[in-house]
Length: 142
Image (cartoon, rainbow, N blue to C red; front, side):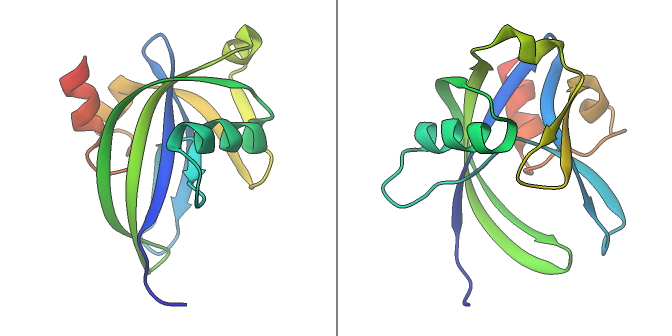
C-alpha cells in the first residue's frame, strides 16, 4: 500500500462549552489526545453524508449536520506511521436529546470512548486536541 491523502469529515457537537471527542493514545509518542468523532469519506459520498454514516456506525446515533466550519490539512505521525488527511469540519447536533445527557458513549466499531471535554482544557494545554489547527479555528469562531 502506497502513501495517500485521506479525506475525512469530523462533527463538532457541543454541550455548552464541552466538545464531544474520543480519547486516543499514541504509545510511540507516549501521548493521550482527543479528536472529534467522524471518519473517512468514501468515493461518491459527500462530507455531510459521511458524517451521518460515521455517527450511526460509531454511536448508533442520528446526527443533524449544519454548516461546514472549515477545512484543515493534517500531516501527522501516529504509532510511528505517517498520515495525511484533508479534514472537513462540520457543526453538528444529535437529533435525540438523550445523547446530551450521557457523560460517556462507547464507540461501537472501536475500543474507544467518546466523552464531553470542556474546550478550556484544550486551550490551557492540559489536554491535546487534534487535528492540528482545530483549536485555532475554534478560537477564531468563538
